[in-house]
Amino acid sequence: MKKRKAVVSLGHDALGYTTTEQWDAVKKTAKALADLAQTNYQLTITHSNGPQVSMIHKAMTELRRVNPDYTPVPMCVCSAMSQGYVGYDIQNSLRSEFLSRGISTPVSTILTMVTVDPYDEAFYEPNKIIGRYMTKEEADAEIQKGNYVLEVPEKGFRRIVAAPKPLDIVEIDTIRTLAEAGQAVIACGGGGIPVIEQQHILKGASAVIEKDAIAGRLAADLQADLLIILTGVEQVYKQFGSEHQEGIASMNLQEARQYIAEGQFGEGDMLPKIEAAITYLEKVPDGKVLITSISHALAAVKGKTGTVITSQ
Image 1 (cartoon, one colour):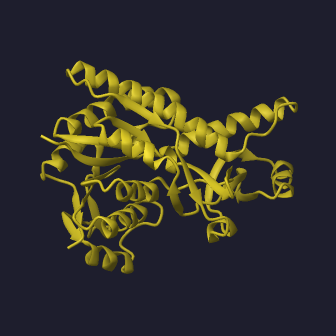
Image 2 (cartoon, rainbow, N blue to C red):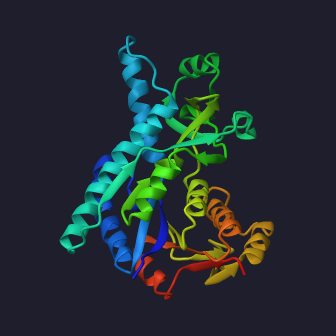
Image 3 (cartoon, one colour):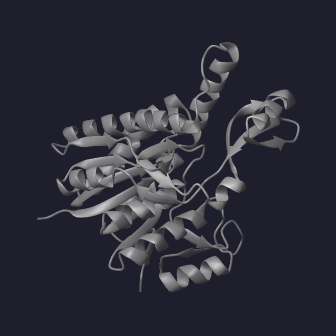
């Protein structure tokens, strides 16, 4: 029986927030992913990297501070580093879990670049906080270099970077080839490494890409049958966090857009996931989106929980 294609987007809960937390978290994540694979899905996996890329940026900035001979490391390189080490942990754990179940499916990680528009409005209004707290003098030095900083009252200053919209996944043909061969593929980690096309050269951008945005684009490019967005809640809710909170078992695109217009979804949490669902379903109207937590993933695939989004 031919396997159906699923793109799985992993949130922070699937990875933890520190190196040691990640070691433990990916073991649980691998079990959930293997459960999905055993329901006859070929998996293409993407993941968040907020805490990881921030940790790398802090470390490299501190290295530069105490060793002036070291060159500063740009955000695009920090993103590449995070893709490598997060991908390594997921790949290793998932391979081990597969083998323990007698599954011989190969697992690979693709270092993935994603093009962005240099004139994207996000570059003029950066809002993604990264790195350590800085003194006023250090913040002024960052501003002198053309970077943006944000003052956090009573704590200091932190750097902020842009989050432009993804245009094209550079390695999409490689990802598609491996997916069609039935392999489990880890790609577009942390939203992908943002790059700007300059003729035949790809230049790294000082930015990050929303992992939900790239998940929707990846699922659309692969013509996936299912986009699974794993987050910190069992399903999507109206009036989330209030005494009138109400779970949404299913919605179509029209209803999703209506809920957005009503302001039902938080800008920093659920809204990007619903927008990713819309991006995917506009390109693959016969597809389906499932939003749930990692602990409920298998039950949600079986139709027992979670939120399902369809085009009609």
